[in-house]
Length: 250
Image (tube, rainbow, N blue to C red; front, top):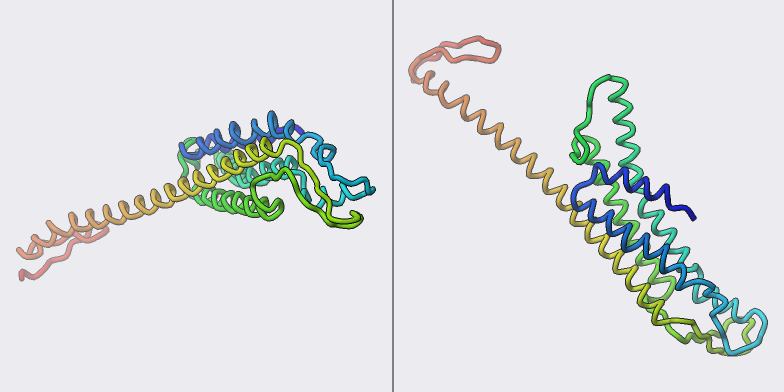
């Protein structure tokens, strides 16, 4: 499978991400994508052939393997990488739409790369929320499918066509458990980074809104102060539009 599209997609989002977003990108590429391509595919290679049960009943091993591994972990992690990276496509599409508007209007409508404003910020926030939801959903799904995050060396199976309860052995259980825990930990790290970045952006917007509101109050107070003193002395008070009004001294 070629990961060029995924790499280009994440690189495009990186131009408009915060510092925390760039750390998330590094975690995805180094701790998940490279580990998946270089290590995971080798560890779980031919897992069905290495799954053995102490019976010669035809079809028993296939039935037991399908029960304990309904989805190949390698395919599960590959699908997870693709899905959790898809929300980033929202940001890429928004940037492309904005650049198209700039060309049509022949002027710059957006801020410089790395600075998010207006609709792009909200699109980025939505992508973070969707990404976090996907990450948590896949963690829960993995736990439900494989009954935990550890790989046992022995499982008991009594499914048909097995003649009775048979013992089935999984190869390299310790190595597979360590790799599984590492990938789960990487996914949890990405969730923490997403929540941290989401909280940072929301707090930043709230502080910016509060500062703008506070500065307006200060300007209103600065404008009203001198004019109030003039009104007390009976001097004309300037009104909006260049007009003046004569006030009766208090």
